[in-house]
Length: 395
Image (cartoon, rainbow, N blue to C red; front, side, top):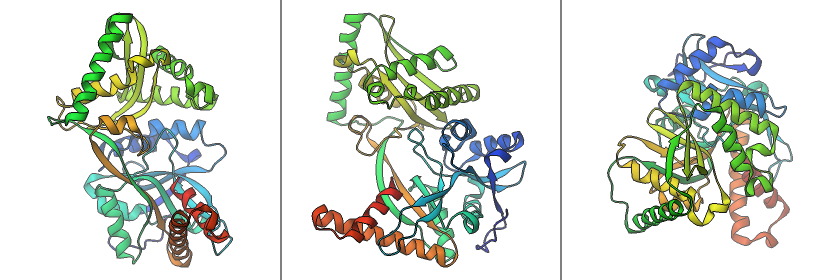
């Protein structure tokens, strides 16, 4: 289906490709676009998206919003549709929306957009060909709000007399490479991590750091290590469900084949103490999952891994590590000094339906603010529902 263009400044066309219509040729063009993207996002590449479609879609309708032809793409966003937002405070109607594909292990929703045509390609992408049939708005969680794609999106909407609603904006820890003054507190934490490493080496034996990407046995060891601790007991480890374990194996295999997987391991005396899975794309490294031996918690092996990355960052100017964590993650926040801004966006579709969603989301946000100011006991039922609506949109 081809969109009816609303933006006279773009000549490009956007279309929706359902999961079962994704061809090898499209995947090849998709990989090429990822290498040209204005902002890298491995969680929107085929190496992560296709295993997610296969193992984690849970009956949802999934596909791709794409701009461009068969051989060359200018923009792409993996999406789920239709998602249903709960009723707002005044109109008790569930709202169908298109939502960017994000999972608990893939917390970055920024579309892939060609760096050479970022303005035009972004404008075409948000013409939203699916909206007329499947939804009245586009929701993008974990959207990078301080880069060229955000600027292009806001500009395209402004030309149409529209605006995206930021339901939730926050900062999360990143680590930019290059020489720097870390400050007294972070220097002391790095020194403490070094001492912990010496203590662990004295207890267990020589420390060894290695990247085991490409070793299938390392993937299984990671799953076993994570499942042996509190995540396994809580049922939140990857190995706790067959589908999430299968997803992880498929992602690691695909990324390893592309040379973009990091599977870092810290061992002491031949025993695995901690592991971390990362994705490298261009000048960015994105954290996916980490695990450590909980009986070695006194030696803080997980902290040792992050502190080592902090120490090595000075030798790698231009390299940026994204923690891909919640904004209140104490460990990353204490060690990594830099931040990036993210938002949950609600992009209204054209016409009255899109305008209604825009007003409804703003009403929900206003009501949520009132609820928080007054406390739960004094809120009206309508305000409570609107608050829950805003919370569900923002995740």
